[in-house]
Length: 281
Image (cartoon, rainbow, N blue to C red; front, side, top):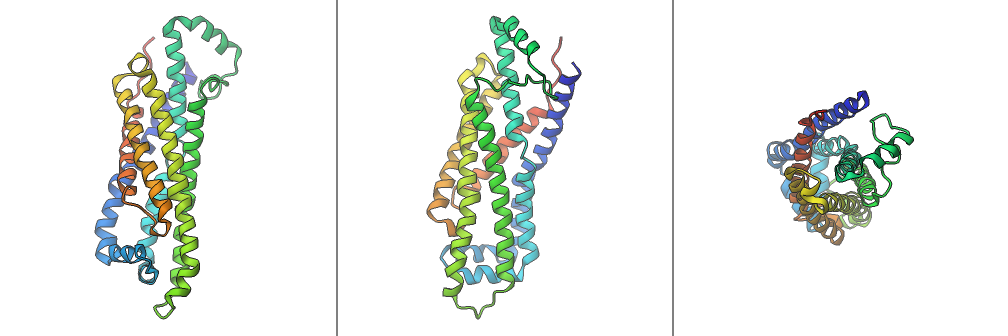
């Protein structure tokens, strides 16, 4: 019982962190762009970079390093806070599957298995992942995606800041483009294509697992949450493919809507976590 309460408390604490991360993505980042970056001409610099003119973009970063790094820091912090989310959702799915087995008349067999298995600190059976390959794949791909996006965004910010600090308007555009486009494009692919693609895969599997059992196992709000994950996966995958086709642009038309919908999905999940109540005996 104590372990179950500890598990519930941990879920609620994680939910509070996820709310912070979601609000940063939904409110903090857009407001920062609106009131800090756009008045300084950031949109024009991005437009120039998208057309292959990196000089204007690098000059802008060199003239506004604090504003640029602050923007990237918000993105890095937001995703770093979500590192535990994939396995938090995985544990909830496992717990719900075990509960469903008990309600379907296999409770005695399940209890015997749990009694012979070592319990983890969060109260879950040590081998609870057995027979749940797609859930395991969703959890690991989600974790890897967040790591890649966070590290890719951080590396890109550092690289752009270093290059822009030594760049001047007298530097020929051809010499700038030779190495810059390759390195910047590679970092964009790591974060937005590989990271975004893995995150899409994670959302797809999580959503499919919940939707497959539907109302037979999950409350209606969780079923809707599962179907929303499928929509998030569709947008994220479209963004990943679009960025791969034009990596030097950094983002695609679908990237911002995909991130915003993902943030809404995270906020939904977080609110459900903080509202979890102990099971009535």
